[in-house]
Image (cartoon, rainbow, N blue to C red):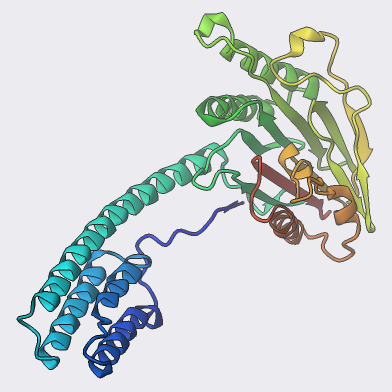
Length: 364
């Protein structure tokens, strides 16, 4: 399983070539000032060097460049024989003062980056606890998954997936909790915990769905003091080891895609269940759909963040059409990687919703 995130520059050393830029600027400005006529003063431009340095590194290197700039300003004054003039004294004092402010704010930025890195680390750990890494192989299945957070600094959202081995096969779950923030994370953790606790006991899918529905309903009932309107869309999947088929129970979730021989077939539920937590609205539920799932077939499960991702013109990402056009990328790893790349390009890196992908291939 992979968690995709934007890279942070906190704690990284800048390249030597980048550090050389402000140093070269100091040298060039100093030489240009010394060679200029007496009425032209380029020394004040030296403040650019520490300001530029603070944009890519911490306060220590910024202070070193600032000291170099102040030293260059003094050299200019000495060479011009004007070290004691009020003009150069003012320039030196102003450069020292501005450099001190630049170093101070660079220190504040460094502390903020360190705190943000710590928060990201905690979020990353929490996400891995919530969405446990899936093995690359589960019984006769190859598995690949990816989670894309819509928020730049977020690692946790309301999308979820899980896989559990049973005595006769493999059970999968993918879903999306209504809402955002910690409330959505709480409900996602509840659904995942209920699934992991019950799926391996081998109840049929309707009974398992009823168990999950009851867990969500109880968590938002007045008895818990957290009454609300939370619910979760989900797809429950049962893949037996000894039969070339897949069993699906859809609870208000986008239908999986079955990829076979360059085609992508949407496995629409004939009679979908309501989302988890809303089962009381339609008590007569529990319809399981059975589809062929043979050796080499790939089942692609996804959340609505994939098919509702928009480009700059407002067009949705055409998932089914895109995967059907790829003739040689049926490997689960290649599949989720390519979809991730296309989603990033389609949205220009600005997802509006979290994305979860789960690709499963039968190998035997």
